[in-house]
Length: 290
Image 1 (tube, rainbow, N blue to C red):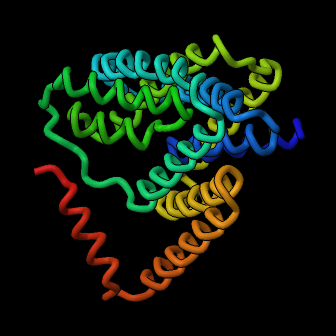
Image 2 (tube, rainbow, N blue to C red; image 1 turned 45 degrees about the vertical axis):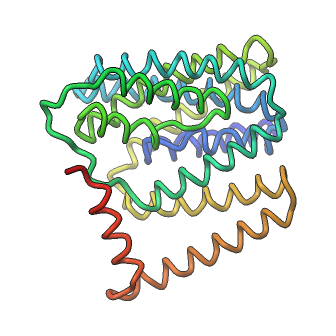
């Protein structure tokens, strides 16, 4: 299973490189259900994998000038405090509860990816409201430390809306934030969780290689189609976790709802006057900043 785990870690890295996020959403199930780690060990190891991979990915963004250091370090410092606290708090929470919480985060991530990124840009001269960004960083960090998720899909909108960053800069800056809070969350776990460092470093190296390859593939694929495919895949994965951790009936119900939603979406793409399109467009206008 070790060979399969490392091979799949490369694919996780490719997805991360192509999408700029979603690493922990795939890494935790991989480590828990393929590598056979217990819930807390999988979450802790995932924080290492995502932290290193994000740090490597941030280098190219920084070289291209797509990192706002003041904003990133401010948000990241708050996120580190929250993530470390979440990692410490996790020792008092059963692993099953943590995995159920992770499944909920998977559903939220999938919905965010299926909806797509709205027009989050704000005027470039907008200054960072420090109290708000610190509070946001603490909350996002706490979620990350607890369940090993809550990365880019929470950080990027926060940086764009609260920090006033253009989307490309928000994405680059988010990698700095994700790396900082992932390492802090890992620190919180290390006091109570044993990590198989040999396997952890092997999975991390494989994910980094995959992420570098994925970044090179971005020009060859349709990012919109890839993002939506990934969203549906994450929804399906959440159904499996719910079935494993709660009851098979819950997972089956979630899988059926996912299949119905996917079918409706597919049918809707074939008709220009589909009501779902108008609802989506109205939601997009409603979430755009004034």
